[in-house]
Image (cartoon, rainbow, N blue to C red; front, top):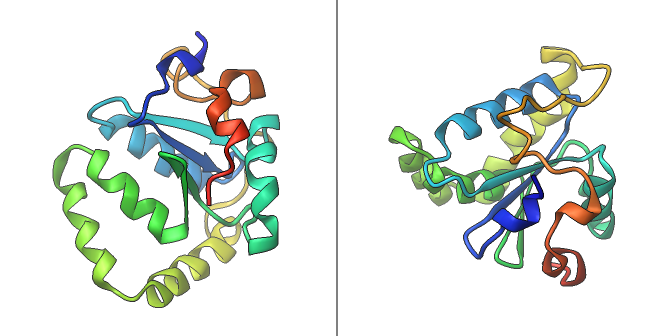
Length: 155
């Protein structure tokens, strides 16, 4: 299935560390609760992931940073998480109240976890292999992403 066909203005493109068990657990969690099927996932280690994060490396974006592309905007770290929460079923969307905490505090906590995630949770030898059910949700090739996301650099 070509994932570009499922992109629309409500699509959330989540770029994650594909060899991190914690990150993969978060992706599984989101997939199970994505109530409107808006989320698409891109491993950072894929050709598409490398392409998407390259322009932001100067801003300190690296493999320890969770990224979200939403309506030509890019969100990092906890801002990305807070943008995803409303798309989830259950009480998780109510955690958006955490946006009232100072970003510096939220991102400091995020940073401690991100820097130590391999120590706490280990590291996979390779990126996750999508199950048949996930194939339409995990995209990793440049030709799978709508051209508007490749040509218009979100900021």
